[in-house]
Amino acid sequence: MTGAPAELERAATIVESSGAEGRPSVEAPSLPLIIQGGMGIGVSGWRLARAVCAAGQLGVVSGTSVDTMFVRRLQDGDLDGQMRRAMAWFPVPQVADVALARYYIPGGRAPGMQYKMLPMHKQSVSVARQQLTMLAAFVEVALAKEGHDGPVGINLLTKVQMPNLMTLYGAMLAGVDYVLMGAGIPREIPAALDALAEHRPASIRLDVEGLGPGEIEYLNFDPADHWDMLPPPLERPRFIAIVSAASLATTLARKATGRVDGFVVEGPTAGGHNAPPRGELRLNESGEPIYGERDTVDLEKIRELGLPFWLAGGTGSHDGLRDAQASGAAGVQVGTLFAFCSESGLAPELRARAIAAAKSGEVQVRTAPRASPTGYPFKLVEIEGLQQQDDSRERLCDLGYLRVPYRTPTGGIGYRCSAEPIDAFVEKGGDPKDVIGRRCLCNGLTANIGLPQRRNGSLELPLLTAGDDLVDGLATFVGERTEYSAADVIAYILGSQRVETA
Image (cartoon, rainbow, N blue to C red; front, side, top):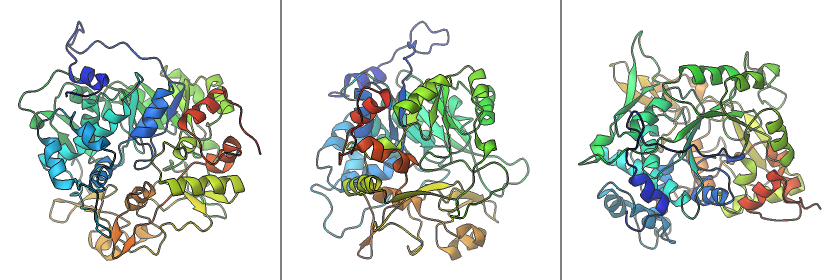
């Protein structure tokens, strides 16, 4: 790892100390006041995470679809050389060379050229496919860790199961300090982190629709498949579960397979995926889910668990931080304000349009109950005149991160997505009602960061998401400015910067 940052050298050379179980002895870090949200596909990229860390708070990279984002950057020529520079630090031999040979295009793709696609994830993939995912996660975390001594986190969706173990291992090889996971019940992840830190095989249950009584399917990952000789143990990152109910936090604290180190308690005003309302689904006149008293998290029960927690959703202000601390929280997780800062991975034209629309009051954030193939409500940003993905898109599933495994009539495992062509979905046993209103989040969110696939001469359109703070808080924070930095956001939340006013 010659030339790697000191943080990565330490991560790669951890040796056993006096721990009773032979595990590295690590001094517990202080808790951050602000956790930067792990947003979308590449919105929370390494540049944003690094900037947040440099300002003394917890920067987080998004691990969702990190492998697709990585190979598209290579195909666009890696013009600043950052991907190739970090690839050279990857400790598993030859993996970076293989990736460069297959995906790197000096100078970038020719005009009109499509991106070369990766094989979609499934229950079992080749060693080479695992290594590409590991490398992508490693590069993202490694670059985020440069230039500061602060901790770096990675955010993954529990619902996007199939890449998660290999993504986590790649991030841990880069010395990731925190793992944050929501969009499901990440009960088995703590034990997986324990195993991966010691380079032992890790397994989690694979959710498969249509399994018979007593049937269980697993996702398995063995670090030994990637080494001639196993290296010393890695530092096990802290695990923070993202929850929307005290009951879920209690279940994880008491019944998770390993140590849970805290919680992000997220309300329905947060961007991206939201938990569905409890009880019978009711919609308002705009077709949005109605959240009620049952959806308010009982913070007293959260406090009783004795673990640190952070509040998320509408907390992106100094008042939000103060109120969170008054409730017993260690601090806040903030997404929306960071999503539109200059270090964000969002395409610059989308950032500028969103800021201008927020300042003029011409933006709406709508909670769409059916947009996401996951079945979770999903926040959609609507800006007058901004062309985004809608129901007119030709249905196609070629990235496949949200595909659902199902038991086939012959006893095997197939994969379907409610955003794929209707005939194909139904032929695979899907309910025709499930396709209504679905969007292709995988392609839409990838287009958000300026990496859209080209099809038949046209580009995939973006699909913006944000929290309610885009409407309620961004204009107040921005004032007369047309752009701002991650450091500006942190100063604003900490109360050390006066907000500009019109």
